[in-house]
Image (cartoon, rainbow, N blue to C red; front, side, top):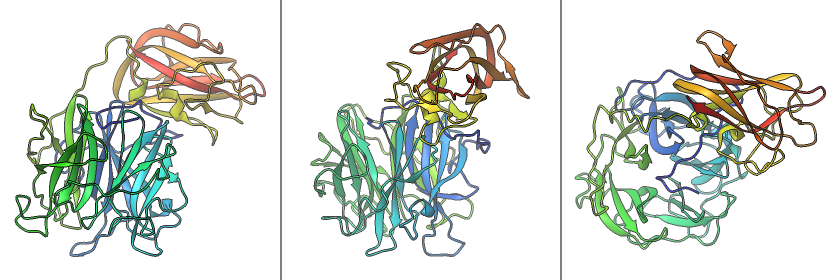
Length: 474
C-alpha cells in the first residue's frame, strides 16, 4: 500500500546492466535535450522517479505530438539521470496515438503505469494500464484493452490524466478526467479492474483536468488544473493548479486555493511527493530552449505547508531545489534497496526485483514476495547491485531460492566488487554460505565501490536462485 509520503524498496531495473545517461546538472527544466510533459513523481527507496510524456511537435506546430513516455530519476531531487523511453504507443496493441499524461503506482512488487492513450476505436481518449517488475520496467500491457473508455458508465467528457492513490488500508483509488469532468472509482486488488461504480467527486471548484491525489497527516489532498479567471489566471487559455482537501478518499472535497500559479505553457499539470523528508512539486512549463505550448518541459520545486495543513503557494524557480542529501546510512544499514539490481540471466517467470524488494522469506521455497531464478542456465551466473555513487560495504546476506525442481542450492558462491576497471573478489572474504532456509552472512574487509556482484556456481544439472540479497554499510 502507498500514500504519497511513503517509500518502497527499489526493485531491479533491468535483467541486464544498462548504461545510463550521465546525471544532468541541477536546473529547471530538469532536462532540455528533449521536451517532457505531464510529469508524475514516484519515490522508491532513496530514488525519486519522474514519468513524463515526450512532446515531439516540431517548431510552429499547434497540435500535441506524443508517442512515448520517458523516465528520469534522482537521488537528491536536484541532479537527474535520463533512463530514456520505457513505454510507448506500441506497448498497447489496441492503441493508435497520443501518449498523454500518465502515472505509476506500486502494488505487490509490481509497478502499474496508468496512461492516457487514444484507443483508435469509438470515442477519443482511453485510460490504459501497463505493468512491470521494477520502476524502469520493462512494461507490458496489463489488460489487453482500456481500463476506462467512453463506454464506461459515467465516464468523463475526456478520459485523460489518470492518477492512482493507495490508502493505508490497501484500497486503491483511480481519479481522472478533463473538460470539467472529474471522476473517481475504486480499483480491485489486481489494479486493472474497477471495483464498483464511477463517481463524480464534489467540491473540486473550477476543476478542468489533471487531478493528483496524496495524503498527509491523515488529510487527503487533491491538486488539479483550473482555468478560471477568479484568482487563477487572467487569460482562460492558461491554467493554474488549485487544491482541495477531504477527510475521506472520495470526498466530499473542500476547495482551499491556488498552489501553483500560471506557468509559461498554456497547460498546467503537476504531481506532489515527499522525498527524504521534504515535499516537492513536479510540473511542466515552456522554459526549455525552443519550448512552447506543445514543446513543454518538466520542472521541480519545493512545496511547503503551513502549520494548519494548508499549502503555501509554490515559488517557481529556474535553478530547481537544492540537493537533498537524505539521511546518511549508518553502519549496518542495508544498502540494497537503494541499488539497481541486474543479472546475467533471469527466467522469464522470475524477477530480479526479488533481490532487494525487502522480503522476509519463510523458507527457501517461499515465492510470496517474488523470486529470482536462472533456470535453465547451468554453471556460473551472477546478480549485481549498482549505486549512482560509491558505497562502503563490508557484509552481505543471501537467502537462497530452492524450488525442489530445476533450481537448487548452489555449490559455491563468491562476492566481488568493481575496482573501477574490473571485478575482483572482495578482500578478506569469509565463507560464502549456501545453506537453505536461512540467511547466509558473508563478511569481508570494507570496500568502496559503485558495483557489488554475487557470483553463483550451480550444482551439476541444476540452476540457482535468490529470494533476498542484502548488502550492508561498513
